[in-house]
Amino acid sequence: MGLMSNPPLSPGQAFGRLAPGLLVCFLVGAVSTAAAVPFDGVSGLVIAIVVGIVWRNSAPWPQALAPGVAVAAKPVLRVGIVLLGLQLLIGDVRGLGVWVIVGVTAAVGLTFWATMAVGRRLGLSPNQRLLVASGFSICGAAAVAGTDAVTDSEEREVATAVAMVVVFGTAMIPLMPALGALSGFTPEQTGLLIGLSTHEVAQVVAAGGIAGSGALAVAVTVKLARVLFLVPVLAGIAWSRRRGEAASGTAVGAEQKKRPPLVPLFVLGFIACVALRSTGVLPEPALEAAHLLQTLALSTAMFALGLNVHVKALLEVGGRPVALSAVSTLVIVLIGWSAVVMPELLGFDPV
Image (tube, rainbow, N blue to C red; front, side, top):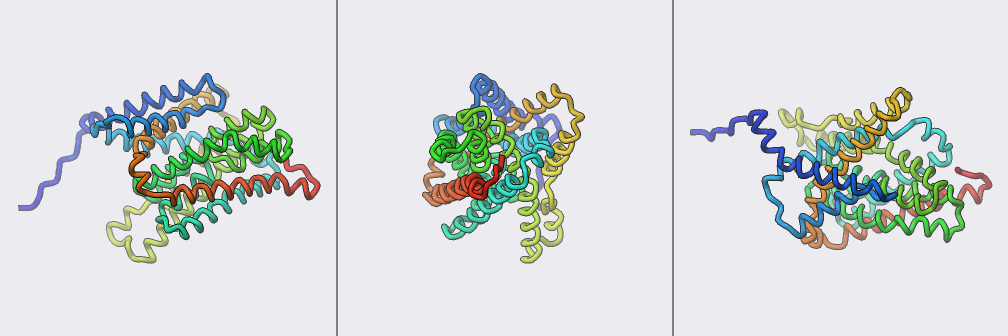
């Protein structure tokens, strides 16, 4: 007699299974978001990640939370990434000027390529290289999670990349303004350096705040231009995976129908939100509400990701991801610094 499959859960049963984990993640995300409000440059996302890491490594983690935590780490995160598009105005990106757009393209493209090349030399898995490359070249933990959505990486690989973004990105908060001061940059030039090189949006805000209001405005605009690269990078990864499966013959028959779309739906949603914001039809209160919802969704997801960061497991990974992260950070800082210095040598002002 064949094995009987489990009957599908009713909507009520499914909700009951997911509710504990989702509720805990949402509450921690909400508290983290609220806790960051009084402090300029402090991100609810970072607070949530840290709380998740501390909980995972210092107290028991009930397995009843696992189904809801899994939903928070992916679907909820995708909602946050979609809403992130409402922060972007195409006009602001065009207003940066040709040189700055070239610098943004170089920072993302060259850092991504160098990270992949060095990671291959270090013997890291393709998924681990992709996670670090996207996180360090585009927008930190959100890019790591977005890349995970199109690669289906192992939890340990995602946790490692997120941990590296938190550690190296936090170190850049005081270091980038200091580098700008040592280089004799104007506040606007320092803002360009920060926006081109710092990993997380929140870390950019913190570093820009240290350098002054003139630096902050430039830094955030440049950083959001880097965020736009989520679209081509994730689409490119998905396309490469599909092509590789087709070439190796691993995706055939019924399995072929399960392949992810060439452009993930949440990336299309991100594009739609950028287009909607750029029309100017959304009133300011709606944008403020969307920004709060986006921060809450990402903080909720970051806590869920933090729960997957197991320090013992990271120690077992060894120093190779740390070395790759250090190289990736150095590359993007050098590119950012060069993008500021070269126009001065050539006799024009990039910002």
